[in-house]
Length: 122
Image 1 (spheres, helix red, strand yellow):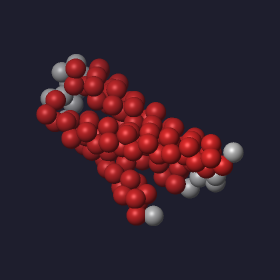
Image 2: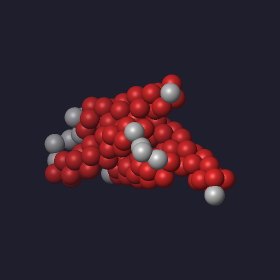
Image 3: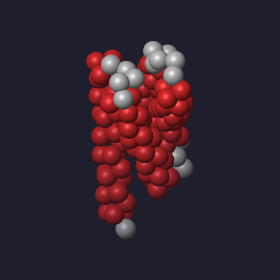
Image 4: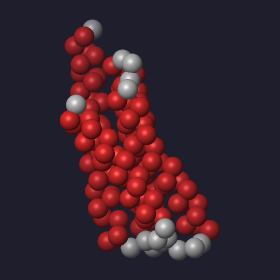
């Protein structure tokens, strides 16, 4: 599926962008802690989306997509913390925040579609 491959690429690029971003953070204990958290959550978005694409059933796919949603939301949280704490300039993260929001919206829409599909199967 072309759409799945595009989303796989986009979710992986979120993790890569965050990896580049954390190298710009100041060398402070607070930044180190946030860096570890945001790298984990942002790379998990792509990894879990790939897992969802290999789901064994519709319910399995839906459950894996929920994990993607949670990890994307957590990534957004850490981006907000970085921005609001002044550890990174808002202009530096505007594009990655937009992309994380778009991926979250796509995943939420997919979850809703899957729920409707499951309801109609019943």
